[in-house]
Amino acid sequence: MKKRILITTTALGLSLTSLEAQVVVIDPTAIAHSQANHIVDLAKYVEMVNNQLKQITTMTQELQQVTAYVKAFGDPSKLLNIVGANQLISELQQSGVGQTLGVLRQTASGIQSLQNNANGLYQQITSTSLSGIGVPRAVDTYKPFSALENTSSNYMSVYDDAIRRREDLRRQMSSTVNQLQASTTDAETQKLHAVLTGQAAQLHAVDQEIVNATSQSVVQDISNRNDEDKQQQARNEEIATDRHDALTKFGAMMLPDTGSDVRFGRSSSK
Image 1: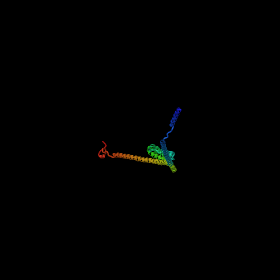
Image 2 (image 1 turned 60 degrees about the vertical axis):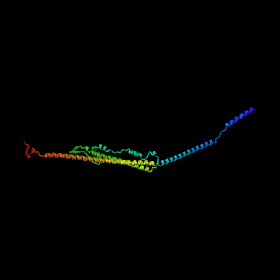
Image 3 (image 1 turned 90 degrees about the vertical axis):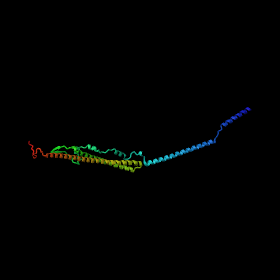
Image 4 (image 1 turned 90 degrees about the horizontal axis):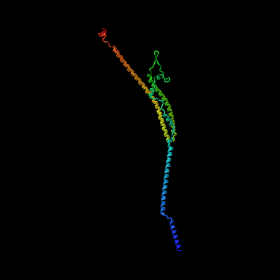
C-alpha cells in the first residue's frame, strides 16, 4: 500500500513538472514594444510611398512640360528636310563661269583679235598691202585689244549665268518665305530663317560676280590706255633723240672748215 502511494505521488510530481514546462510566458511589455516598432516601420513605409508619389507627380509634370515645349518649339533633330536647304547647298557648290584676269590675259591672241568682229557688230580687220603686195600685220601689237575683248566676253558669260542663277535663287527665297508663313514650330522657323539668310547671302555673292567681271574689263581697259600712253611716251623720246642727233649733225655740217676755206686766207691747194 505504501509502495502504491509512493509511486502515485512520484508520478503526480512528474506530471506537475511536465505541465510547468509547457506553460507559455507572455510579456506584455515586449508585445507593446514590438507593436510600436511595427507602427514606426509602417509610418516610414507610408512616408516612402508618399515621397515616391511626389516624385512621380513631379516627373509627370516635367514630362508634360517637355511635351508642351516640343509641341510649341518642335524637335530640331527631326527636321531633316527643310525646303530650300538642298537647293542652297547645290548653289553654294557652284563656282561660276567667270575666269581670272590672269587667265584672260594669258589667252590673249593678236590673230584672234584681228579676226574678231563680235558676231558682225564690228568690221573685221583685213590684211593690208603696199603697191598690191600683201604686208603682214604685227599681230603681237593687237594682244592688248584681245585681252580687253576677252574680259568683255567673260563679262557677258558671267552676266548671263548670274541672271539665270539669280532667278533661281529668287524663286527659292519665295518658296522659303511661304514655308515660313506656314511654319508651326519655333525649330522649323529658326531653320527656315537660316536657309533664307543663306539664300540672301548667295544672291549677293552672285551679284558680286557681275561686279568682279565688270572690274576686270575696267582694269584691262586702264592697262591698255596706260600701255598706249607709255608707248607714245617712248616714241616721243625716240623722236626727240632723233631730232637732237639730226640737229647735232646739221650743226656740224654747217660749221666752216677754217683750214681750207679761202675766206679765211687759206686754200686747200698745196
